[in-house]
Amino acid sequence: SQRMEYVQKWHKSAVMTKRWRLINGEELYDIGVDPGQTSNIASAHSNVVRTLRAEYEAWWESLSPVFDGHVRIALGAPQEQPARLTCHDWHAPDNRLVPWSQSAVAKDPETNGYWTVEVLQAGRYEFTLRMRPEGFPHPIPAGVARVRINEIAGETPISAGASAAVVTLDLPAGPARLETTLEGADGTSRGAYFVDVKLLAQ
Image (tube, rainbow, N blue to C red):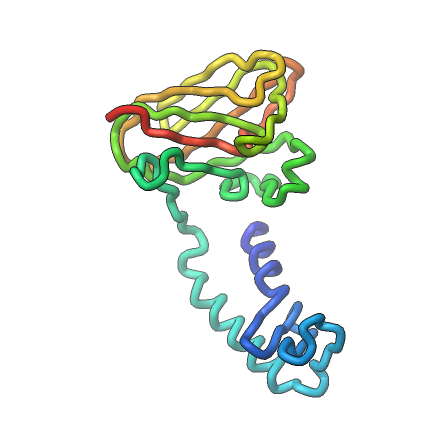
């Protein structure tokens, strides 16, 4: 898939050992003597380049059986109240852009994705939706905030100037797909880039 090709390209950008750093499978640096990576010595150490490339390819091949799997984020764990979700962990259908960096989030893209989660305990959960992390107020366009987790959904109005919207849902335990939507009265629609999920009561 396009996402897997992107991930592979990103991982190939740097392969490191304690001594060597191979970049894009072509540039080699001895980081012990050249920590600033100013001198590409790949041509003088072609055997090292071949070895690091082969090790990378073997590692990548070992991951291929789980490419389509999902690592679920736990909700309701007593050690993490609230669980803090970010759009960096979205799964995006149709190869939609995932805003994985702060510079991407800063553009407020109209895109969405979903999280794969595991609700550890049945109970009432509070979802706080934001466009920036807690402590960095940023207005959400006035409209409606929606949360859907499997077949359970809820919504709340977003008032003008609000930087957060809160939706409360009663959830059963088990694996789930979580998606949020911030629909502006101005016609915009995007997922909440930052969501805090807190277990209120069992």
